Image (cartoon, rainbow, N blue to C red; front, top):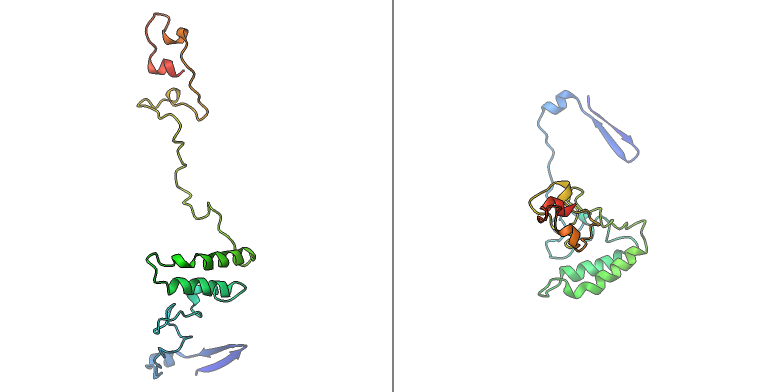
Length: 168
């Protein structure tokens, strides 16, 4: 036998196996397309912004809700060649407001969005190693080449030094 139980705001319905075996006779009511609070998404059928859309994550309310609405509306209705280019002041005002409430609008660290597996940047001023990749031929990051001296230009048998001898 099925029954209902109310616990606070929740209504719990217990059903039997027999209740599940019979087809449902519930009638579904079609959504009202003009309901601004319905599950319409960000843009309503009228083309207006649905400020109640959960996709906005509550940005339209709170201490910076007005600035957010102004900036977002400006961008949405923009007809400029570069969409939203006339909205910079609105977005700046929104950003300044958000910086006043860091506990509500935390800023991302610059490195937080970066890929952790990304290779480190290469110093473009550092010498590029040639084909020999042995440690002796790859200069360290604090390597400063010194001009050759007459004594180091030639080896003891008066032959020019090899690449590995010159690097040491």
